[in-house]
Each structure stands twice: as C-alpha cells, then as structure tokens.
Length: 306
Image (cartoon, rainbow, N blue to C red; front, side, top):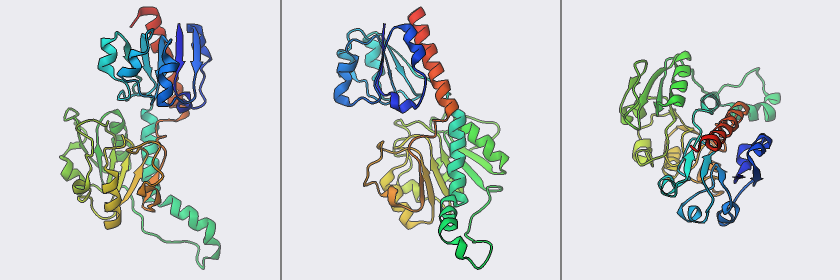
C-alpha cells in the first residue's frame, strides 16, 4: 500500500510517522499542477488539501483506490468522476470549528478596537503625547446587530459568542435549509442594511459565488464591519475595493478569490482592511484533530474497503 501526501506544507508541523504502519509513505511539501500525475501514478491512496485532482489526473492513477481530502471543502476533487473510476473520496468535517470561531472574533475585535492602529501609534507617537491617552472612535458590541451569513456549526458558534457580548444576532441562510429557534432569520438585504457587524461562514457554491457584489455591498451602513472567514469569491473583491473608497466601512478577510493573493490586489494596500492568509482553521488543536481524522479514515478504508 502506497500513500502519497501531495501538499504536506499546508498542514504545518504535524506527525506523519504513524502512517508508515500502513505501508510506503511519500511526502511532498508542495505539488505543482504539472507534477501531480507523475507523483500519484503508482499511489493507492493520496492525501490532498488544495492540489486539484481532476479527470486527467484520475485517468493516470491506475492503482488509486482512495482520496483523502485534508480539509472540509471538496471542490478540488472531481467527485463524480472519481466515483465512476471506483475511487472513494473522503473529507474531514468539524475539526476547525473552534479555531475559526475564535479567529472570527480576532478579526472583528481587531477592526472595532483598531488594534493595528493603536499598536503603531503607541510604538511611534505615544512617548511624545501631552496626555496619558489617545482617542479614536471605536464602539462596543453590546446592543449592536450582528448579522451572520451561513448558520452552520461555525456560524452557530459565532452567534452564541456574539450573543454573550450582548449583540442582537440575526442570520441569513445561504442554503435556505438552516433554521434556529434562538436567532432571527432574515433576508440578505435586511441583514446588510441593519447589521453593524457582519460575518460570513458559508461555503462557496452556485448560491454564494459573488453573493456580496457592488449592489449588495452598497447596502452596508456607515461604520460597519464585514468579516469573511468562509470562502473567497463570496465577496466580489473588485466591488469591495470600490465600496471601501466610497463608504466608511471596514473589512476583515481570511480568504480570497485567488490564494495566495495576487500582489496587485488593491485590498493589500487598503488601510481599512485587516488581512490574514487563510489561517483561521489552523490552530494547533485543529491540525492535530485533522491528522487524527485522516489517520482514522485511511485505517478504516484499509480494513473495510470503504
């Protein structure tokens, strides 16, 4: 049995030793598109995070029986074609819920409390101040409307914490399937118009692609905070750049339409945006849990064939 990890670098410093009990293990830190076919041509099992496994790759993997996606999202693998080829595909769900909820608040609080601004001021200007403090406008979460787009497990986790801060939580279900007795469900337009804080926790699909375009973003009220820890592409980045110039709103982004982000992306230069490199999922605990679930899935497949 040969197992190939295609983009181990995306998993950080984790333990791969125990996988050797299943057979031969090859670990590649990164894999470019033109390297994929050669690296998996004699693999029985592959583990991929963001390396694309499409029909051309599958056609050249004659021994392949099992694909383990080292993430929740499955859009990088041609699931239907894999099924036709008799290849089982598994993902890992729920491993990063706590981490993403926590990072959501890191971005929200960083923006509201202007942490980056105050840190820079304290280092460069505070020693010359004539008074003990420095005033900039920031607000309290208590009593504000917090709108959540996507009320899955992460969205629910954020909602509960937002409520504990004293916020009034409303939500919009992108699938139309999620309901809650605890929080008020509203249409997207109402959420955007009334919420002071908006956080996105939805997958990228035909319902959410460019969900927040220029028209929708124009509904945001002055001084509001918009955070996306869902998927890049839910917010149209060109339209967001325009709105940031036109209105006094602020954004926190952990995900982008193209990852890594293009160097000429105008959001990189905006002082009204707080950016992190798609790392909300990656706490020590989340990555440990992810590797445990990957191990269990492979173990189960080897023992039972499914």
